[in-house]
Structure formats: structure tokens, C-alpha cells
Length: 505
Image 1 (spheres, one colour):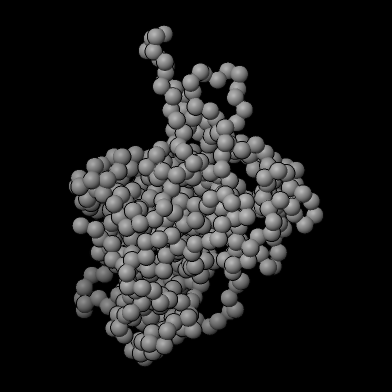
Image 2 (tube, rainbow, N blue to C red):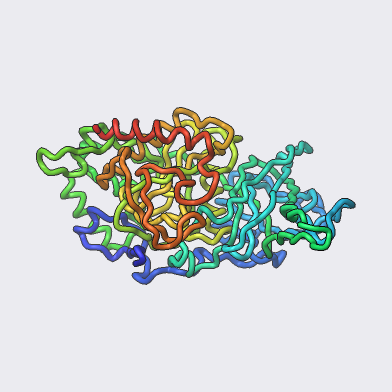
């Protein structure tokens, strides 16, 4: 049974106390791609050369001060009027044939060195989401405004392990593409990429040729500019009696953006709860253990088994462009387990850059990969800061696209970085513990316990198979993948113990 519930904003006053509110939307599921853009002036399919305000990019054959190489995107210096982000989508082509190439082997594809508009994150996508990329992807980039090129960097091939479940509305109702993991490269304006197919298996005899492994069709290089960070909010005094405020109001759009009927409902809810958290807030404040227990309205004498609510940076706080995603929200019935991931975007980011990394991943998930929204429910940076991921309300069972086959009744947490050979910072592991102690506690789940989940179909478990897992699991527990990296995976035992302790177990 599909567990997708799509909710519009036609809620009653009573529902306003428990459901996240959104801008008006149809009650029917929105299955087409969100926020469609006009085609690029280069007429390359999927290229985004328009900012979110609808301003068209300049002619792609020249820049304001110099002529770009043939076919190059123009350079454009960032300014105070910079757009809220953009994506350049460039088709890959066969590169020069090396003299030692095995006869019959697929050609290396890529792009030679070229100029580009400034970008900070790269990835490769292809037409068929079911096709796997059997090979290696490497990129080199040039720092903006310099002649300095990076060394070749590996891009994790990913192969559809982070995605909406097969047969789901998000998977079937959109143009979903295959994709590598995105890689954060920092502010760059030049790029070179090569995709090498796997070498054919050695022939069993001289009479039998090796079978070549083809690369997916329609491969394109995606260059993502995250745009500028949101302006800091003016300092405001903390609202009184914050423990009595439902957390869902902290990530509600500003009242001015809501229809009059919902404005009235919010006012009514405010009267009931005395104080409503500031609408459209950038941060959901932390609560103490006692405040958290009070906020969930436990029955008298009931044991809470819920950790203190941690501080969470909202989507507004990291600058999510809400026009990119689908307007409706998808929910499941519960949150029975948490899957921990690494974003595989590399570790060459500062904590101050984390919001830019998130905006880049968000744009890559929606515009490049074809998902309805950011894939993970939450993200954690290397300094231990927690961020709201997929929209729908941090207290709700929001359906994500993080663990193929096991998105239903679970949540996905991405630790920003790559942790195959690098130890995750202790602050990040602690943040995972705090987040799971609170969110799993809202649904009565024990972080040290086991849970039985039904597979929606993956390369590890067939559809319908019942699988017993840890309540806090790694991505590799549900899918044959290296994620969340060997070093982060080894820390999950610590996270389980700490999370349970925070719950009071």
C-alpha cells in the first residue's frame, strides 16, 4: 500500500495546531516538475540560465569584457544583485581516443577545459534513472578569477541509492534522472571532466572478445551556483513561554503570504496557545528536557522517553528557494527508524559555507535529478549544526527520498561531507544523537532498539521483504552502498547509545 499522503493548505483551525501550513495548493498531488524554467539560449535541454526572479541570463556567446571560448557559458561576477542560484547543464561527448584503448571498449566521455559561469558544486546526470554508471567520474576546476586549477577529484558514482522508492508518485510522476553524488568544489569558473567506463572483463579465451560496459546515455555535467546567503534577520527578543509553542509554527510561512482564512486560523491558534513562535523564523530554538516533555502534551505520569529538542536551522535559515520544490507535502504514518548518510560532497567546506552546500544539493536534487524536493529530512554539518531538510514540518513524518526501498516510515539524516577514509567530527556524531533522541522520541522509537521494515525494492532486498534493522541504521543497511562511509558507519553504535541516554533510557 502506498503510504504517500499529499496535503493541501485547506486545514481547519484544529488542524492548524498540528499540521505545517503552506501557501495555497491544489488538493491533488502535483506530479509534474516544479518551477519549470524557459529553455537556455544555448538550447541545451535541461540548462537553467534564468534566476528565480525570471531574469534571463546574458547572451551565452560573450561576456561584458571578453569573448568566451566557443560554446562556453559566460563569466558573471557575483554582486549584491546575484540570483538565488542557477544551474548550467552541459552535454558530455567522447574525448580523444588514447592510443592504448582496447578495441571495442566504450570511449571516455567528458569535457575539455572550458570557461563557465561561476559555480560551486558539480555532478553528472543521465537520462535513465534505472541505468547504472559503471565507471569513474573525475573533475578539475579553476578557482574563480584565477588561473589556478585543482587536482583531479573523484565524484562518487552514487548509482540511484539515494532516491524516491520505485513505484512512488515522486518516482513515476516526474522526469527523474540517474545521477552521481554532487561534489562541492568551491567558487569556480572553469571546469574539465572525464568519465572512464569500467574496463571490459578479461576474455576467457583468445576466441572470445571482452564485453564492453556501456556508459549511460544522455550524460550531462551539472554546474550549480548556490546563490547568495540569506540576509541575517534583525535581532529580536525571544518570545515568552516558548515551551507552550508547538514547533510546527516555527517553520510556517509569514502570515502575509497566507490566505485570509488561514490568517484567521493562525490567530485563533495563537489565542489558544498564548504565544506563537515567530512565523517564518530562521531557527527553531532548542528546548530543555522539561520544556520538550511539556510541549508534546504527555499524559500525566507518562514516561516521556524523548530527548530535548535541539536547535534547528530552518529552510528559511539556510536560504532554500521554495519556488523550486513541489508545493504539496508528502507524509507517511510514522517515523520508526532513522537512516544516517554522508552527502559525499567532500570535506572541503567551512561551517560558514554549509548553507551554500545545502542550497547547492537542493538545486541538484530538484533541477538536475528531478526530485520533488531536497532528498534528506535533515542535514548536519561538520560543526554539529542541524538543518531542516525536506519541507513539511520538522515534527512530522515527512516522506523523503534518501534510502531507496526504505523511505516509508523512516527519516534520512545526511552528515555533510565524505567519511569513507575521514573520521566524522565528534560534533557531527553528537548532533545525530541529539536529533534522533528528539525526533524518534516523538514517535516512541527506542534508538537502541530494532525495527522491522518492509522493503519497497532495492539492490539488497526485493520488494515486500521484511527486514529487521537497527532503529538508527546506516544507508548501507538498506542498500548495497558505501554510504555513509566506513568511518561514519563505525560511529553509529556511539550515536545509538548517546541518543537513548538523552531519551532517559
